[in-house]
Image 1 (spheres, rainbow, N blue to C red):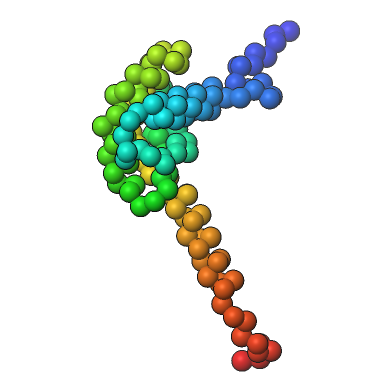
Image 2: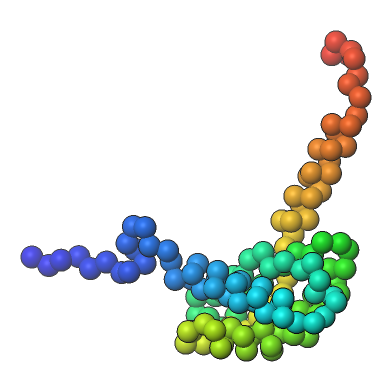
Length: 132
């Protein structure tokens, strides 16, 4: 009688490898950003890193308080090699992913929804009985 073999990632309760690599890279990039002396990177938060399963590329999503997202994206691109080197030093990966940076639109969408809700709450009630 042959036993069915299970791959490690299929075991219940196990955290998938790519998700672990995503979180590891997010932590490394965030720590390294704190060490970089660049005013454009003040108030930048790394919200998520999405590493491809083959480890060749990774997209770093970030948010920034304020309105200088373009300057922050430019600074991140300039420091890309340093951030990749930090990943290579600290992570035990077969390959170091090439980083690309993208503004996290979910944060902006959430802020917009919050603004709309505040505006709606600030409007006075119409006082009518709703019968048009």
